[in-house]
Length: 421
Image (tube, rainbow, N blue to C red):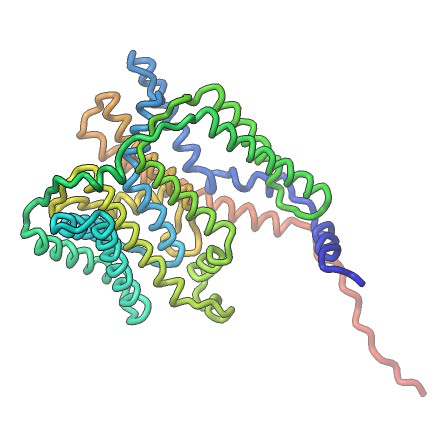
């Protein structure tokens, strides 16, 4: 009696071993370009600070400051990437964040507890996400028109709620819950992460040799694990004063990446965004996977608004205006497709870090504000252009490889029946 496992092993052994080109695919420009750009920007600012006699740019204080500045856009960039993967986008996240903050502050000032106020704010965001998703998917209105309209309408609703005035609170509950510093021993924890990556790489190499998998990721995981562990032990601080909001940001990013990378939900979401009709024919509930990203956008936009008021204890009707454009820029920098079916939340996080590293670096080096927007615009356009050109080059290379590959095996000539006398 044969079992499924030996058959799977035999099938894996029958597959050809990955070529060097296939092993290097995750590190090509159109896939890892945002990481290379981030490293180049960090190196540039570090050298500039060194040559001008300023403190070390990547000091624990400044690096923690960059992460803290990235929190709001970073969280929304992660969720916006999910929405873009599904084949839609949402222009109302900034207004929804402000409305969620306004509702939270209003409920809190009315005498309710912190828990009730937070739930009211989050519920407001969910309701806005459901409205957007229903209009886009069930009614069939274009996502650009819907979210542009809700962006304007929600901002007007916030003006009515606040009577055009800033809302303040003396309640310290939100601040106690979402603000403050939780120091991290980065040297130890990042080194542990590097060791885990090294172990996973060694396991992948062993499975490749046994013929159980043919992924080709083992060598790169081993190299990355060694580098991460070495760099952390050599350079990272033993006391890294990260805020609570940074931990929330990192938790959202890691959880979203795990779901998209390792679950059936993630695979179905990519399928829906890549080819909606094919996904429907394969039995996927397309409406569910189209509406859910809008709901997530509303929920986490409200969370961002709550984090905003927990930090400043005030909200005004114009708060977080233009936030949606920065969020989209971060996702595009991360290589997320505007047409659906492609994207990586961790790259979108790096895209957000690039934007706020530029802002932070300009401040540290005392560059004039007149040049900052110009440089950011050039970086965004340049990154998008590099992605497009690198992808075209990769497609041409794949076509050439296919054209110059081994010919298909000869098929046996069809046999004709002979009539016997």
